[in-house]
Each structure stands twice: as C-alpha cells, then as structure tokens.
Image (cartoon, rainbow, N blue to C red):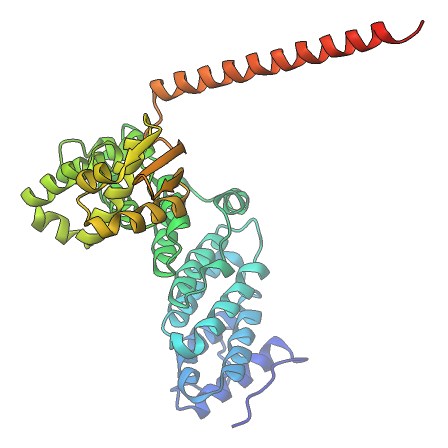
Length: 382
C-alpha cells in the first residue's frame, strides 16, 4: 500500500490525507475534514493511528506519525495537552520489538520541536522516558541529572513533577539495566524530600535500598543512611538489612537471614549474591587496619572452601576496592590500601593525618633542594 508522504501540502490537505489513509485501514473516520477545525481532526486521527502499527512498514509508520507531529505543533498550546497525552498513550502501545525505536524517534521529534518554555514539554519528556525504558534505549533520552535540570527549569516544572519524573526515570534505567545511574536518580529523588514530608517517600526509600543491595556494582552505601526518607524507616527490617551491608560482617548478615529468610526472599534479592557482596565488604573491613591477612583467616571469616580463597582474592582485587597482592607461597594477602565502607569522623581524622604527613614530606624535599642549591651556588666562582 502506498502511504502519503505528507509534504508540501497545506494543513487541511495533510489532515485530509491522514483521514483517507486511516479510513483505508478500516478506521471509522470520515475522509472529510471536521468542520470544527484542526483540533477535532487531530483528535480523530490520533484515535485511529494505532491501526498502522500492524499494517505498515517501520518506515511508513514513522512517516505517518511524524506527519501527526507536524500537525500537533500547529495547535495552540492551551489546547494541546489532551491531544499530546492521547498521542503518547498510543505510542506506548506500539510493538516494542518492531517499532519501539520508531516511536521513540517520533516522540523525540515532538519534544525537540516544542517550545522550550512550555510546561507541556515536561509531559512529552515524561512519556519519552517511559518509551525509552520499553525500547531498552534510555541513553537516547537521558545522560545526566544536571542536564535534565536545566531544561526542566526552562519549562517551569514543579517539585511534584520533578519527583514523578525521577521515579519513572529510575524505573526505565532499571529496565535498561543501568543500575549505577538508577541508583543516582533514586538518591536524587530521596534528596528532594524534607523532614516534613519524608514519611511520604516510604516506598521510594524502600525501593532505593533494595536497588542498591541488589546492584552487584554498588558496595558503599553509608550515604543512604543520611537520607531523611531512609531515616524514617529506622526500626524496620529493611533499615536493619541496609545497616548490615553498611557496617556489619558476613556473620551478621547470616544471622539476619536465618531469622528473616522470608523477608529477604520477598525483596527479590538473591541470598547467594548477598553473601558474595557481604564477603567482599567484610574483607574490606578486615583490610582497613591490617597489612597482611592469612588465607586461613580469610577462609574462616568468610566461610569459604580452602580451594576458593585465591579466586575470591582475585575477585576482590578486580573490584579495585582493595589494593593487594597474594603471597601464595606463604598463603597470605599483602594489603596496600583499601576503601572505607563508612566515612565518618575517624576517617576524616585519618585523612588529615595523611595530608599533614604529606605536607611534612614535601617540606623536607623543599628544604633538601634548597640545601643542594645553596651548596651548588657556593661552589660557583664569583
């Protein structure tokens, strides 16, 4: 079937061709433009636009949808919201395996073609994020929170809208397996709550903790405990579990799991993955104040089989959480440095001592260089 190109025509002609096209696909729509004007035409055209998802090729679908976009931007802003919501809803129902990227490109065209000062730009982007998650292509619409904030300020997004956007963005990032960015977005979301409304963020805080615990690349989580919505969960099992991952050892987790196995399983977390992460975190804690750790100690503390110790140490080194090397002959691990699981006052004191020592060493180097330079100048003939 030949699909109109919808170029070099008037708005009325374009609407009429779209009507004719959708009627040919079986839509209950008149080929005649509505006497009520373009708004009514678009309302009826958008209602019928999903018919082309099954019948037409990807290229033709994109052409038709972009033609609808070109008409949408002609509607006065104050009358556009319902049309845009309806159009976004239709795009969300495309077969993602065939037309997911097509719908994403079309809605992106609408977003970039819309006035940057219009509040409706938020509505378009919100749905764009949803589509990107469905199409597994979130990187096409989101790169950083900072850039997103800039255009949100231009369109006058409210704090409530910002929270809604962060929530759907977190869901899409999680769907696209962008766990690191998803964690940053959720932390940003929790940071928008105050002590007065922190109790309203209970579900978000719960989701943030579960996401962080389940992410194989997230190890340092002490900053979550400072977030007001997370503080509101103190005394609950989810907060106790987070505290274990922040500062306790493997034995503490195993005790918790034995007592609350059903709860941990209900979170959708893997017990085996939890154990492996706790082994890594426990080893970090062991390495904080030691220069060497024997294989026997590692085996006992981390409940490993004798032939699993070396493989575990290699995995620790690969994470770059600990700088170390193995002395296989003497069956021990030599520690160079390690990241701290928590960074409180003791760590700041330790950092200050390191910086003071570093400054003292630089002063000694400077004094030595001046001594050498002075001696050299004294030997130079006047």
